[in-house]
Image (cartoon, rainbow over all chains, first blue to last red; front, side, top):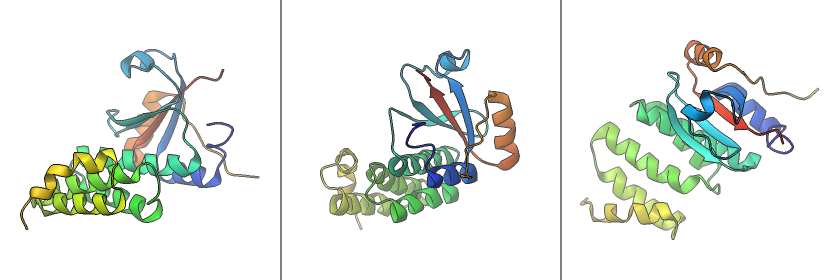
Amino acid sequence: MDAVTYPNEQVIEFINQNLIPLRVLSDQQPLAKDFNIQWTPALLILGREGKEHSRTVGFLSGDELIPSLLLGMGKGYADNDEFKDALRCFDRLLAEYPGSDSAPETMFQRGVALYKSTHDPKPLKEAYNQLQDKYPGTQWTKRAYPYRLIGD
Amino acid sequence: MGKILHWESDFNQALTRAKAENKPVLLDFFNPQ
């Protein structure tokens, strides 16, 4: 990460604009125990209150780190019922990084956030249809499979 | 000169900034070896 990803100017700009970056050694206590760190690099998105909302383990290139962070931020906002901010993250990811590894889960999470914010189940079915069209065969398309049965 | 990341190293200081700037925290556990 230090040799390739963090020196990337787009990564630097994204993190400085959108997140508070905090870096600690993998054995620093009590944080390592509190967050059950077993392998590195481990990147966690925490809410403003310090609660974990997402994590990734292992190397990510710059092209994958930014969408991974957008997904984690979106999930954090959705966890706190801040759906407008969550959808802003999800929509940006799908517009700017549609080929990233994070895109299929983001499409799934976007459908969930729209459903939870409106109580209208149609976005879940739309999410399945979009996943089947753009990311067939991914685990997130399979997880959305039951939503195809939702009526119009 | 290129841009650099300004990492915090203290958990509580990071949370204080997160609340003040209304941003989530990116917590990176790393192994320098």
